[in-house]
Length: 384
Image 1: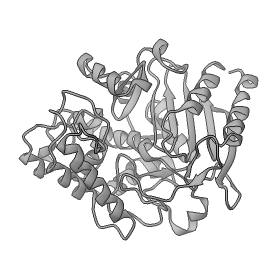
Image 2: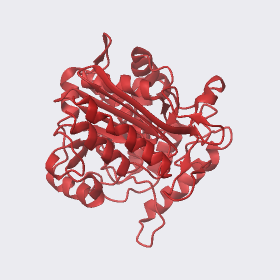
Image 3: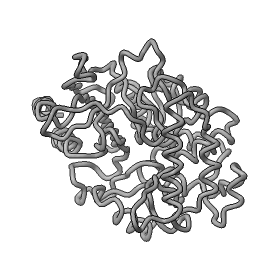
Image 4: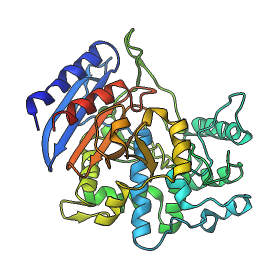
């Protein structure tokens, strides 16, 4: 890699902080299992002048989804779960649905369960889902009582926004999948993740909450408008508690995890090395190859492109984007590159062809894959 060119990342990150586009950010790049660089800028806590660093713990939000996908594939590899299985065979309350929803629908966001909305053209299901999310937000601010399975069962009483398998809609599919994993494994979702992924990989700072002794490392969340100073955000979202200070009953497979850059890097290194990290095998090589090559059928791809135009050049499978037409993407990449992002801007990228891993963390509201992400990707890939 062109290490001198990679140095442009520091200026880009420093400028983003100085221009009030982000409060703090860090990024690590690994090529051929060798760390080619680590960069950080800004603060995890502006008011207390705590720097954003390698030990900073961040809320992953939707970057929890790839972890949930890997958990599901562990069970699929073992013959305990089938992509075409009707989820009502695991969560019996779904037997009352007039539609059949499969495990694959959950992994590909084709289940019909959204994140809710109250627009004029919203379906009744979307409105009911919005009410459910508000209920979750209220519950997570106290000693939460609504469990992972409770949420799946409540969703079973809400009609999907479309016939499953006929459309694409980003939403609560991964949260239902978390409940399926609990039932199939016979374990609490968090216990399964710890046993099968976190402990083997040494991801000691990854969980659904941050214990008291680590709270000082948890980053604050900020609204950043690029004009005024960042403003601290301390409200729940999607049923995720803002302070992450107690073990939740609802362990959200779609948004609930928190982690550090080095912990999540271990997860990505496992993927780029064909499912194995430091002699610990989590997935089989052929499964990881499938993750990098899976794609939506043509008709569903058209729906995805219509609903997620900012992911031009990508498809979506297994709770992750997968690059299929790199020339149409809005940043440099490679076909087969896969990963995901989160509401607060965390981002992961795994490229098997180039043996390349990128992990970037921040805690900026409404970020996802945004301008800074694209600038970062362009610098990294033009350095290859």
